[in-house]
Length: 132
Image (cartoon, rainbow, N blue to C red):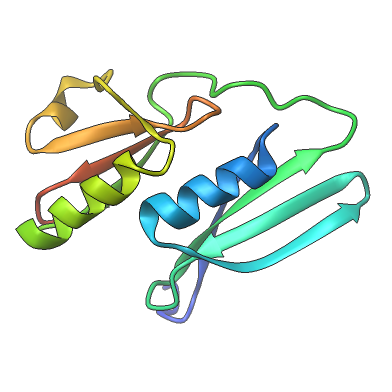
């Protein structure tokens, strides 16, 4: 059994490290919780929220290109059941550089909105309770 004290990090590459970091901090209300520069040709930023046990790590490599998301189904999904919190989140992400897009999977169109970042990765804000 996994301990409740475990923290999950989701890492992904980007060619736009500073811009992506700004998009996710402004758009999702995350904070920069760590980072590094020129560590074996990698630089990175970790963003997260102090009340949650997960964070995102964006990395860039000085000699390799990351390119765009490989599919339209590379999603981070956030469930926001409170209507007021959902409305605030939609406004915040809409004003932070994310582009509102039609979801590839029509499931997310019911009660949620999908946004795409500079790299083509997508964030879904769902105005519903988590199914788990």
